[in-house]
Image 1 (cartoon, rainbow, N blue to C red):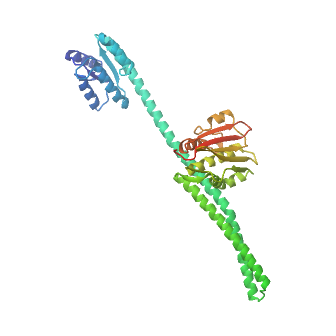
Image 2 (image 1 turned 90 degrees about the horizontal axis):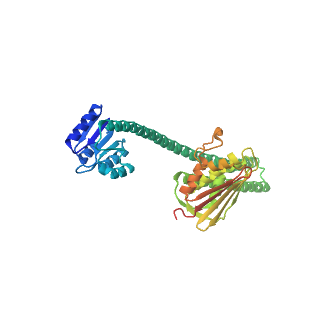
Image 3 (image 1 turned 45 degrees about the vertical axis):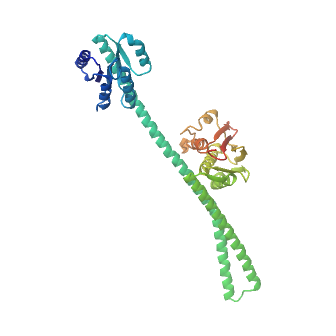
Length: 400
């Protein structure tokens, strides 16, 4: 070992140095506590053990031990043995209990006693450093796990945004398709009108019928293109909110409708229904992107877990004011959850559908967004066969 000895008396210091060197150790020596600490702080190779006298000028052994302990806790652990007289034993015990020293030897001592203490210290030092290596390895693994978790959370968010895109694209197909049908019909009628003009077969009644068809087709095109435009604008607003994460005021009922619009093709495939009960004038100033993610994850959780192998399920989303808060009650009449699933639902990576692509992050994201981003609380009630109910309470003004 590399051992630093601090002893203000020359003869005892020389005897101690020669003894330690005879046992195969490398020794650095100092004549007082301050010199010892300067040597400790300045060496390139870490000191394994400090053997220091208690009473020394400029800095006593206990203060030296305190400083070395603080420094060694930040870098590599150093084992500390304090040499003390019997009269100092009470103070020594106090220092020992406070963790400033690892062991002490009462003067006068013989070489065999010191050798045993060094051997014990060497073993404990090895165990301590091994434990630190294990802790560092565990911390690195934990940090890597957190980084992986963040990547998976981001992937989950992007998957949700991808689902939003798919849902809006599906909804846009209907008005765009109707608009194309009306435009095609109008094109055929114009072609027929040209034919009648060329054959000089156009009558007043036929012209009036054509104008009626034009009015009807034009109105259909305008209505459906307007609907498609509304869908696109709604999608842009939701998508921007979800990606930027900015806070703004928004109507709860309107936003619930826009979120459900993007998910309508998902829940209608199984014949499921979503009922919304929310005042039109309920407005909050919060993070709509987080609101989107929470609702999306809850609906998808119902579809994947609650309504698995079931048809004609019902989801109810009710929102109401409660003083300075808004309470959102989300209910489905699906399969429900057992006690174990309910207890572990918010745990990261916990899922009952891993074989079917579940990440186990959907509900953890919900919990984190509600409690951290939205500054609220979430509570769940569920039992097998009785459906699931979430109570989400968030402030109307985040940060208030």
